[in-house]
Image (cartoon, rainbow, N blue to C red; front, side, top):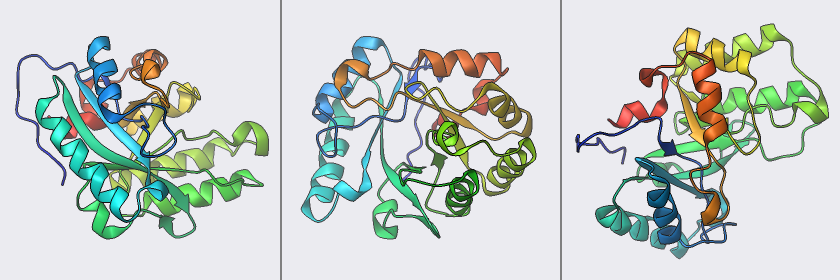
Length: 228
């Protein structure tokens, strides 16, 4: 259901947050509250990306229906996504559901014992056609150890080959600047995410913007540019 946004005045592609949660999963605010918070911050684009494992049966239908209705009235561009789990073999987002979404974030949430195990899960998501963005990449490295630079570059190359993006997470402050610079150098797109679980944190992506600018990123280096 990837939407093409028609130009409507000046849209600042830096002004976006594609990683937010609502009461449809483990967030504290209703979708409308997230939208209103994003509008107060002056965002041009907001993505709601609730955890896919919470969207089963009727809740999945309600989620999609409510967000599509809210999109019609919002004073910003609302994108409908989910955050999936990076699993062996790929993400856990159902194929039929993916057709109804604008984008999918895949994140490692499982406890891993080594950087190799973490990278293996990410590789599987990078080759999963249902996935668009790798969420908060590198979150486990301080606990399990750091991969070599060569391994990280190979991962970025895999993202390049498969047209995937990496999130710059303001909440977890990952990935590191050198990784972001290499993504920009190789044309691997990036997205900004607050990982907000309450409305007052929606749009809190200043760290993401700062790191993107430090890396020399341009508008075409952002995942959100695919929708403009």
